[in-house]
Length: 367
Image 1 (cartoon, helix red, strand yellow):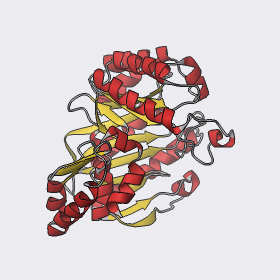
Image 2 (cartoon, one colour):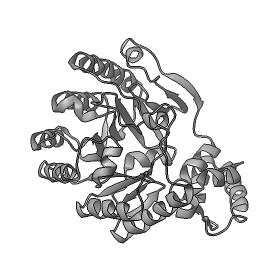
Image 3 (tube, rainbow, N blue to C red):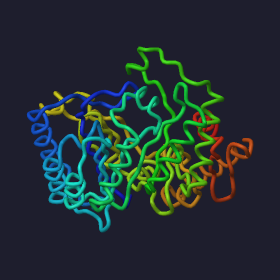
Image 4 (tube, helix red, strand yellow):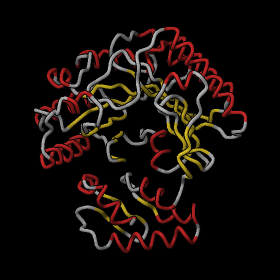
C-alpha cells in the first residue's frame, strides 16, 4: 500500500444537471465557510495518525471552482501543512468551463494545482442544452486557452455518449473538437439515467443498447486515432498522462475521502460520508462499509483497466493465495470468447467489446 490519495468532495453547485447523481447543493458564503472549517478539522484528524505521503489530491464535486481561488488555496494549504505530499504529487481540480478568467487559473496553479478536469460533455449546442450545461463549445476552448496561459500543462476533458438523438456523426465532431484542444486526457462516459435524477422523472428515451455499443466502440477507435490510448473503461490519455488518482481506485490502493457523499478506502476499511451537508457540518461521522482489499475486489477493480489483472500484482499482494486465485480466474477466462477478453499466463484483460458487457463477464470470472 505504497500509494495514498486524498479526495475532497465540494458539494456546492450553481445548478443541477438533469443527468447528475453526484451529491450537490446550492450554497452561499456562510455554508462555504462552514464547509471549509469542517474540512480543515477533518484534515487534522486524519493526518494525525497517517504517517504516509499523499501521491494524489483530487477536488471533485459538485463544482469545486465555485469556492473561488482564495478558499480553494486555503484548503490546499491546509492539506500541505497537515500531510506530506509526495514529490511530484498529482493535484487535480474539477471545474466547469464558464465564468473563469486567467487570474483564476493562474491563482490555482500558483497555489499548487497541476491538473484540471473540465466538464465539456459535448461540442454540439443541442446536446449541451439537453444536458443542462451552461456553456458552449467556444467557452470550453476559451477555458483551455486560459488554463494554458495560467500555467497548466495537464488538462482533462469530459465527453458523454449514448445521448438521445446522438450518433456517431455528432460524437465524431465532439471528439474532433476535444482532441483539437490538445488536452492530455479525455474521459468518455456513457449516459446512464440514475433513479431520482430529472432525466429519470422525465422518462427520457435513450438509444438502444446496440446503438450505444456502436458509439462506444467508435469513440475508442476515434480517440486512438487522435493519440489517446484507452487505459480504463471510460478513460483515455496521451502516453504517461493517465489520471494517477483514478488509477489508485482501479488498482485497489487506499484513499481518504472527505465531504458529504465522499467514499474512502483507508487502513483496510471502506467507509463513506452520508449525502447530507447539514449532518457533515454538524459533526456527523462516516458510515462503515466493511473491510476492503479482498482478492475478489482487487480482481474486479483491476479488470476495469486495459492492462487487466496481472498475475505478478496478485502474487505480490496476496502471496500463494493470489497465485491460486489467478489460476482459477484464468481457467474461467479460457472459456470466454477472445472477442471479449485476452488471457495469457501473466494477465487477463477485457477488450473494448468486453468492457461493454463487463458486469456479466466479471460475474462469470469472479463467481
